[in-house]
Length: 375
Ligand code: SF4
Image (cartoon, rainbow, N blue to C red; front, top):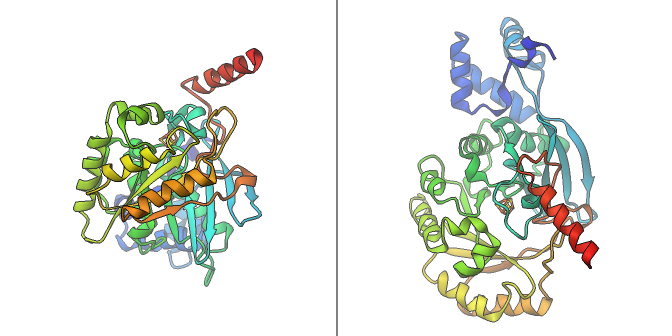
């Protein structure tokens, strides 16, 4: 690639505001931003010459100074249950994963926000991969663009397959705040994907200062990756809890919900159940007590085993018992059925190939190897 090409502005990840500023910097009218935005995100066009309602002179100018560049798809896998997974190459030698989960009329895309993750939750395959870097806004929205294109959704009268997006793939979205907010704004933008704010969900493990800022810039739905009903256990499972304990996190989440214009909104509590770790009746009782005054629905996720993890899946009996205790206390409780297991696309299994800057992946592999040798 030549120097001139690398300096081109990638329009794929620019919000309406940034695209408008870009056209103004070229001495062009503001409405050009909406025209080009529609071509990119509603028609899937990545070649300026196809933008027929843009003058030829401007198209030529754009081709000189800008580009629409999505990362390369290295692989796409389809599960027998309709789940689809993509492995996407990003600059720097790593690859991230994105998963689509169909469920009746609903199609949920689970989008990654970072290459790996710095937080190292003990039950998460992404955490074991270490961390490389934040994704750019273009790399985040590209996951939606790639999925929609693969389903023909960006063609005239194409099927509306991607109805929901969850920022729940690789990475902690609040540690990549600005890029995630820009990408989510594009997901909700009427001239782009037009997904309602109720159907775009940001899931966080609890970066409280960033969560405190979130309501200033967006009103997407919120999910909290809680996974434990007390600080002692959560410190083990979700290490960021040592910095921002449960009470602080729930207070911040409540403040976020309270600032939402719609008074009926609830946050989702994600709770991954691991056998004899956090699945006992007393854990359910503690959870009910903890969430007594918090507007929540609870999503129970049976742990999905992966290499390098010693945790086991919750038994069906323990799962039912846990759910019943919460139902009896009046909570709305759903159980996430495992999807995409045959293509390693289930919740908590996303790994990609992370060019790990933390050397954490190497340490985990060495530790597992030592256990195998001793065993
Ligand atoms: S659960 Fe989320 S925050 Fe924790 S290590 Fe995995 S990706 Fe990171």
